[in-house]
Length: 164
Length: 386
Image (tube, rainbow over all chains, first blue to last red; front, side, top):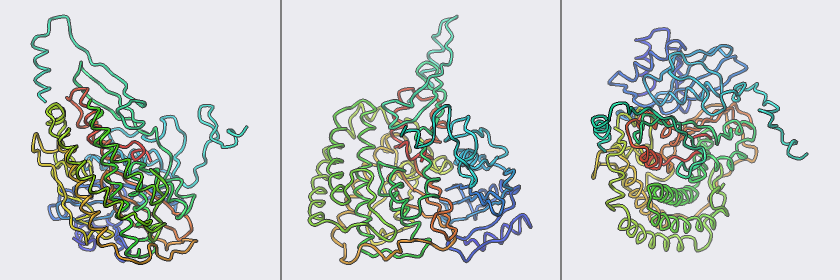
C-alpha cells in the first residue's frame, strides 16, 4: 500500500493525531503526534491490510534549531512487502515518547540506544538504561550541543595527553 | 535437546538437603569464543542456562558521531570499521546512500566491480563465520580449510584495493580503481578451486554426526520471532523466511543476475535451529560463486566511477537504503541538511538484532550451547557497537 493511502487510513482512525505527510520526497513519511505513536504502531501492526510486522530501523535526530528531537520509525511488512516511515517530533527539553517495545521486540535495543545517545525517554520500556556507553557516562553524545568531557575516571580524552 | 527433561530427572533423583541454586557467571568481554569483545552475564542452574544477558558497547567507536565531522567523502574509510569482516558492504551502503541523496548514477562497470568485490567478500565472511563456528564447537581441522580459502580471497582483494580487511575500495559514484590486469582470470581460477574445496569441506564436517548433534534442535527461532526481533539475512532465512534484499528489493545490478536464495528447512532438526543457520551460509557461498561467474562473463567496458564533485554537498533530505551484507540487511539512514557534512547517519546492522535476541532464546539451553548459538548467529562485535 502506498504512503498516501496509509495516511488517509490513519487519519480516518486517529483524526488530528496524524500530522501531515510528505509524499514528493524520495522516502515519503507521515508525521504522528508523540503521545499517539504507540497506538498508531499497534494499529499498523495489527491491521491485516497493513501488517507491518517488522520495525526495520528506529533513528533519533537532534534538531537543535527547531528545538525538537525527531524519532524516525522505518516499518516494513514481510507479508505485503511495503514500507511506512513515521516521524515523531518530541520536545527537545523533555523528550518523552511511548515505547513500541511491546509491539516489536526489535525496538527494545533501538530505544535504549536513542536514550543513551540522545536522551529520549520511552514510557513503558521495560529496561531503559544505557546500552553503548558506560552507566555513569554524563550527557548524550549525539545531541548537537554535546561537549566531550575532558576526562573519564582519570583517563584523559584529549589527544595531547598522549604526547606529553 | 531434551534439556527440560534432563532437569526434571535431576530433580526427581535429587536428595533432600542438596538444593541447587542459580549461579551468576561472567562470560567475556575477553573470551575466545565471543568473536571480539562481547560480554554476557549468564545465569545458570548447573549446566542449564536460565538467562544470558548481553552487555554490549565495548567496541563503541562513535562512528555515527564521527560521520557528522568528517564529510561525505572522508567518511568512507570509517565505514570499513563498522564491520571489518565484511567491509565491502559498508562501503557499498555508504556509497549508495550518498548516491541516492544526490541522484548520482554509477556507471555499469562500476556496479559490476562493486558486486564482484562484495560477493568475494561475502564468501570470505561466511568462511570465517562457519570456520570459527566449527572451531568453537570443538573441531579444529575444518577451520584451517576455511581460513585457507579465505586467505586466497584476501589476496585477491588486496590486489584489487591494497588492503586485506579495511578495503576503502568504493567511492561515492563508483569504485576507486578498475579491476587490475589478470584479476578476472585469477578470480575464475580461485572459483574453480573453491568449488572443489567447498565440496571437500562438506565431506569433512557438514554431515559429521558429532557436529550435527551439537547443532540440531538447538535454539530454534520461529519465523515470527525472527521478524519481530528484526533478524535479517542468513539468520532470517534460516528461520524459513525467504527474503533477500538482493532479490526482493534489488539494487545495483542484482536484477540482471540469476541466483537462488537458500532457506532453512529444518532438514535434520527444527526449522531455524543452529544447523539451519550453518547450512544456509554454506549454500549462500555457492550462490555467490554463481553470481561471480556471471559477473565475470558479463562485465562491460567503460568507466568505473561517475563524476562527483570533490566538495560533495547533496541537497537537503533524508534517505534510507539497504544492502544485503554478509550479516543480513544493513540499513543506512542518512540525513543531509545541504551542507558538506552529514546531519545524521544511523547504521542498522544485522548483528545488532542478532545480539538482542540472545536474551530471549537462550533460556533452558545448555551452557556449552550458548557458544554454538552465538557462533551460529554470526555476531561480529564491531557491527553491534559501531
